Length: 148
Image (tube, rainbow, N blue to C red; front, side):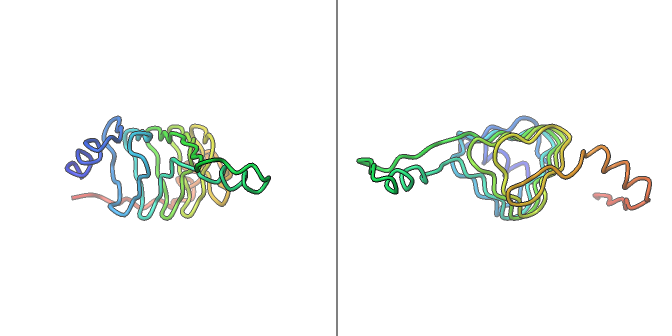
């Protein structure tokens, strides 16, 4: 993982701290527009999409065809202690706060506040992560997984 993190940094990705895990199948669109926080987990097949060319399609639909395609770029910023579930798509301009869980298969756009669990397409707020953790503790659902 350390080598992979160094490789990602060398191609322009900003990594603050040390990610816990980034799957090798993760797709990064424009490395220079992406910032990742500390203790991040990014599951398999997550896509960080920093561009959007649909504006050109919209202009053509109203008969205002531009001379060339117009791409809109937006950075993606991920806070600390974030878990991003498998097959999620992060759209341009997305900012995810600290202590956040993104459910598997989610399509995320805009700002996700600290301490949130969001899921779905589009991703919507499910519950405060602190309430979720306390509920799991009360029901004794937690099983410890030790790394060796």
